[in-house]
Each structure stands twice: as structure tokens, then as C-alpha cells.
Image (cartoon, rainbow, N blue to C red):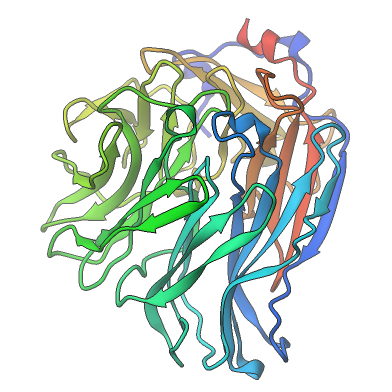
Length: 425
């Protein structure tokens, strides 16, 4: 990690702020069940995503999430995409399996094939899109295609899967966009390739998802990469022209680019500025309506004019390159926690101001004297937050979700005990 004392905005940790987390409040050891007749020897790609917020205009009302699996069962000659939702008690932190149980988004009983698969989801309506190279419905072997659907606030799942000849690209789970104002329609970009890199625009609204047509970005390579979007649960909506969804892509030799959607637009655009490579990074949203993101050399930038990048101070925490995504969470009031290097026993707290600059950058002890059991293997963990009350500034619970072998997963819930006001002082 970078020596934080050399960074703009760094301050010595505030002693009165205390430790980040308290005693574990909830544990869940779960297993996603697919309905395959003989699941022995089955394999999967998997991760986690958020359900719809019960009140779309207030993301602090959410307390349901899910484990997703793209799987194959050779002994059953079957493939499918299955999700298992789980709920967090907002008052106690207890975690339990949702009453809907494991649900198949689709099930193919005539072919067993599995390969690279990614998942993106929107932060408001529970919409999800997953591109991959699998035995989609109606096919007996590997095909390029996608899974799509909606995970409702109650934990019920609807959707399907289909062959497309496109959409295969990479692995991982990513929040695919920043939330629009007042719980309105969100637009997020997919990635992957057909002959060359490209993607789709996914339209996400209450209870429904629309998958747009395939758009090729150039005629050079198939390289593309998803970008995680870090939103603040207490803020929705961004100034017109600000980037609200982004993905790395390749266009024409030797130009790597970013595909993006600007606030106020519904179209996929390709950046004017070039990049050094495709890169997994984060897009951050600020309550003032501004957004910013990390580029290929670790610096920070924003779109100043229709895809022309303007660099910002390179004074943020060192986010360990490609392992950054899914490791930074918004915790309200333009505050963020970076959870990607927890083997040191600390998380990194920082704020972003209205000028897109870092402030109050400091390390915070995770717990007193010892790290939690899931440390230091944070590369296999996704983090979410749950609020105790609808109008709280900061969340009460940190939800740590970890993939295990096969279809197994674990969820751990801990209370935030740190004094956020002291960190911001």
C-alpha cells in the first residue's frame, strides 16, 4: 500500500473514533441448490448482488441480497443460473435465508457446459445481467449468451437466459451503474465481445429490465473489462453529463477506450481519450452531482467533455490495481471505506469533496487486537451495508459475503462501532 502520510488529504487517525467493527451479530453458512438430479461433481462461477430497494427513492431501505451461481452438472447433463436470496435483520444484524429459497433464473436439462461468466446489477431496482460462455437453454454445449432478470425486494426472482453469439468476456460481480434521482430509471453498460469488443445498454426500472441490442465498439481486439460503481446509499442522481455507467473496451489499434453513459443520456458512447489498457477500476458518485473514476495508471479523472478525460490529484489510497473493484463501499455523507488490504488490520477511510478531491484520508483499525476470520483473503469477499433506520446518515451493519467451494457461501454481519463524526471532524 502507499504510505498514506504522503497523500493529499491524509490525517493521523482520530483516537476517539475507535475501531471500525464490533462483535459479530450474524453468521450464515448457505448452499445454493439447483434442482439437478445428480449434483455430485457440479462446478460453478458465483458471486453476490443486491435485491431491489423496497423504497426505490431511498436505497437505505434495502436489507435483501443474493448469492448467484452459473453452474454445470455433468452427472445430470444440465446447466443453469440459480440464485439464493438472504435477509439481514435491520435492528439486530441477524442473517437468514430468504423464504423464497434457491430459485432458478433458467435451467437447461440438455447440456452441461460452463465457462467465463460475469454479473452486473443495478443499485436500485434489483436488475441483473450476466454474460458468459455456457450451455444456455436449448443448447447442448458452450455458447456465447446472457442471463437477465430482476431480484425483487421480497427475494423473488424472474428472468431467463439465451444464446446470442456475443456477451462473453470476463469474470466477477460488479455494480453496473450509479443510481438515478428519486428511484428513477437506471442505465448500465455491459461488456464482452462477439467478433470484437462491444456491449449493450441495459434499462432498469421498477420490476422490469430491458436488454438493448449488441453494439460493436471497434475492429481491433475482444478485450473489455467491467467497472464497479460505488454509490452513496443516501444519495441518488447526478448532474447532466456526468458519467453514471462505464466499462473498459478496445476500439482500433492501438486504442483502448472507455464506453460510458452520461447522466441525462440513454446511449452508449465511446471516449475521446485513449487508455493504456482495459482495467478494472471504480466509479465514485458524490452528493454534489459529480462523479470520478480511477484510470489505468492509478490516477483519478473525470469526463470533462464528452469522453475527454481530465486528471485529478493522484492522492487517493493505493487500491492495489485490478483488485480494487468490490472493495470500496459508500457509507453515507460522501464517506467511503476501502476494504481491500485488510491483512494489515485496518480499513482506509476517506471522503470526496465537491471538487472531486480526497479529504480525511486515514487508516481505521478493524477490530481491537485481532483481525476477523475472513482476513486477509479479501479478494474473495464482497461487501454491502445495511441501515438500521431509513433516514440514518451512516449504516449500522457491514455485510461480508464470501464464496466457498462449489455452491456454498458464507455471510457475516458486524456492526459499525466507529464514530463517523470523529473521522469526519
